[in-house]
Length: 85
Image (tube, rainbow, N blue to C red):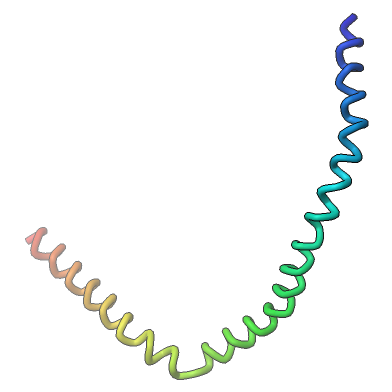
């Protein structure tokens, strides 16, 4: 009796096979296009990243940010020293 209930769920699995075979047809093409575009973009992204790092524009853009962060660190240290003192 205990082995019979597991046998019942098995037959529904057979009809599920054709149903699962249909979605991959419509679902598989979309992933292929993004994969191809991503693969083609990957080299461009890496080259762009290398060029960006090599260019001075990045450092000129990061410079003000670094200055602000360093100033914030200095202010924080001074505030900590004043609080301790």
